[in-house]
Length: 80
Image (cartoon, rainbow, N blue to C red):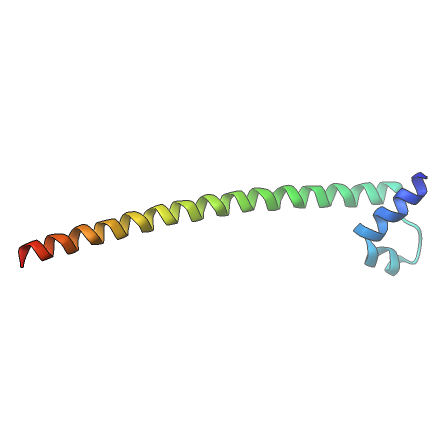
């Protein structure tokens, strides 16, 4: 059953590596690949969070700038 699970993991995680090597991968190689995939996933999630924060910050600045433009337009209309 463990071998079946390992085979399934290899097919999903290492399809090209397994084919290219033309040999069975060790449990250690599979675990290392799974660890690397988990690490990449974590990095992607952290990057996504940073980008969402950056977008939120930029939207706030854009909203503030738009409000300032409206204040200036109103002041100009009042001066005319």
